[in-house]
Figure 1 (spheres, helix red, strand yellow):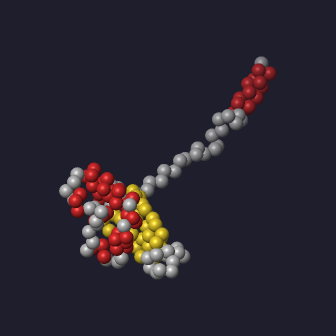
Figure 2: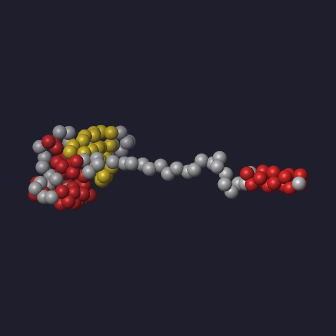
Figure 3: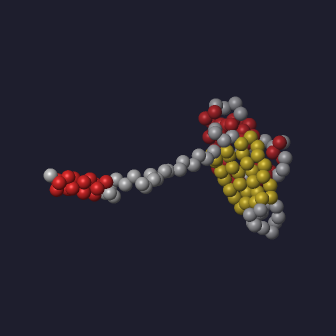
Length: 138
């Protein structure tokens, strides 16, 4: 009887020390990064001087595209911020789409951001306070 009791205690000891189900290790947690960046586009062009290229970035943030804000940012070749301004993304909507449904407006805004740097006239949006009088043209 003593041998059976000792055998049961030893077996219980080995089972409790098993590495198969070790609970001392913390479970890995996947970090979910919630970003409100909806769209972005970047190019390098001479803007503040003709000698070097600056980085021009357009960044659309918010919960929905039609209610988002657009940040227009310029950094020089040293990484220093030259200018940064924020406007309502709806200002980039082509006048022909002002009366369109929300789906068409979103498609047009996505296209606009995607091809923003293709037209030189869009660079006027990066000039301080000029966006107030500008209307986006396709």
